Structure formats: structure tokens, C-alpha cells
Image (cartoon, rainbow, N blue to C red):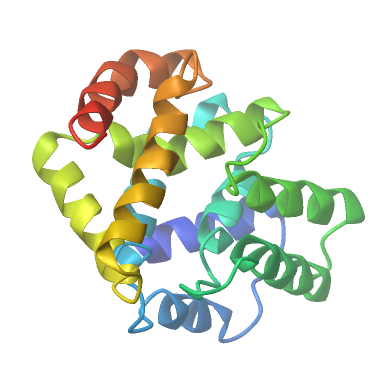
Length: 201
């Protein structure tokens, strides 16, 4: 099995549930939509591989892994509600699969935590958000590729507007006392993330 198959089956097994027929294919297809350049299977794979290396630290690893699958499942480059729609999709399929209400609520909150506009409130949310933001602390070559990929997703935005908005977003991360919430990610990614971000702002 490849990374995706292994992760998908593991997440549902951890939840004690059977995934809906065809759902795996539908989610993979969503990540391959033509408007995507960064929020693709490459990003999903990077997140899943990183999760696999730290999964022992989560209280509800199955929920976190499934939330990673859905955190960018809906991605319209001109929409403001991608996380909301992604979370709704996750909740819908969990309900259909027979997941308990508390599982649905936690997965919904995990996906919504990737909005990055409020601080994640639980250790599982903090760990998931750190995984999503690990790209900021990637080696310089991958970080440069990521920066180009994000620009490609916003190709419709004029350069002066994009540059100003992008600088604002990245500066907000630099302004944090720590970009990452969990000790392991702070140790592994914080210093490089700050070097990467400073190179752009």
C-alpha cells in the first residue's frame, strides 16, 4: 500500500469505523483539482508522513489523522469558507459512518483550527496545526517551492496587492512568541521557519 492508502485505512480503523464506499477516491480527486498548486496531494502527503512520526503524542490519533485528510478537502481559491465547508464534509461522512457525536465535534474543531485565526485550544488541535504549518520550517528549497505554489493559487490577484497581503500574513506568524505550539515542533522547525519567513518579509 502507498502512503495514502495506509493512512486512510489506519485513521478509520483507529475510529472503529468503516469508510463510506468511494469516499477515498472522492477525497483524492478533490486534492487534484486544477486550481490547486500548494493545497494538493503533495501537501497532504507531507502532513500524513509527519503525522505518522508523531502520532503517539495525540490523545485521539484517528481523529487527527482523519482531520488532516479533510482539512483542505474543499479549496476554492476565491472563497473565505473553505475550512467550514471542509469541516462540514468531514462531519457529514462521519455521521453517515456512524461516528459518535463527540467524535464528530472534535474532528470538526480540528479542521476549523486550521483557519489559523485563533489559537488552537486542545493538545490535539495544537499538534494538528503544527503539522499543517511545518512547511514554514521546511528546507529553503522546499520553502521556495511552497512560496511559488501559493502565488500560483492566487495568480488572479494583482502583484502589488498579493505582495502586501502575503507580507501581512507572514509577518503575523513572525510576530508570534512561537510559531509552533508543541515542544517537538518548536525544536525541529521554529528556527528554520523564522529564517524562511524573514527572507520574504
